[in-house]
Length: 248
Image (cartoon, rainbow, N blue to C red; front, side):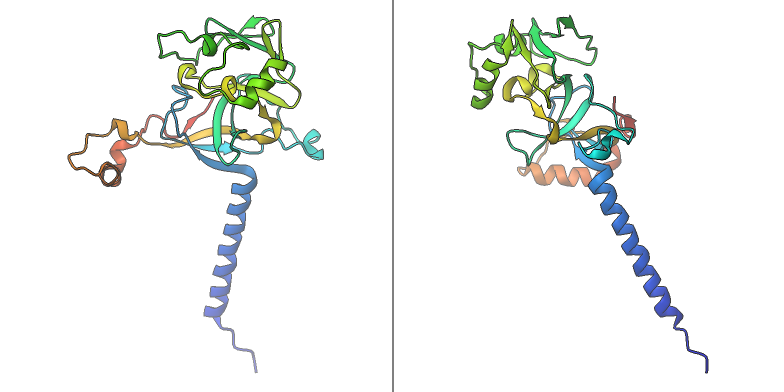
């Protein structure tokens, strides 16, 4: 007698295998290739806005492995926007722009950034505060501790300043936000170690208007109101002009 083939069982097994294969591929992609990231603050405006959702390329810079010299990975360059683990609290992820690479000499004079004695051309930078801050806009200042300055960084920075410029050590990067007056960056907490860098933003795959852009609530519960409004007006609160925009 010929064996009876249970088509339903085979079909069920095939579906499970297909599902498991999809899950494995998705886990691999999320773990090693790309990662979703939400912009939580205004420090990179107007390049990146609060409410932007990014896909981050985790492969572009390699990972300091032996095969990094074989694969076509690119070096981290000045001007690159990077996502990294915040050195002070590594569980948090930050996004900033690379200003100084290892060996660079960085300084700010009257809000202008100079690297190795040459002023950078930074068309993406905005200044929203008319007030001039001595520490923030005339960096580095080794004789003027300010609120928000990390104590360990204050001590380290004093040892790395030469002729009015901060020297970026090997294996580290100096980063700043494009919204210079509203950015907690390397001026306040120090360098980003190479091993903390996750990758480079590729694409804004979605962008939502923030709660400040939404109509004022007429009920006491702000959170409940905004959640209900967002769910019922998802099409209207999506920034369609930013969706699927390449980050550069």
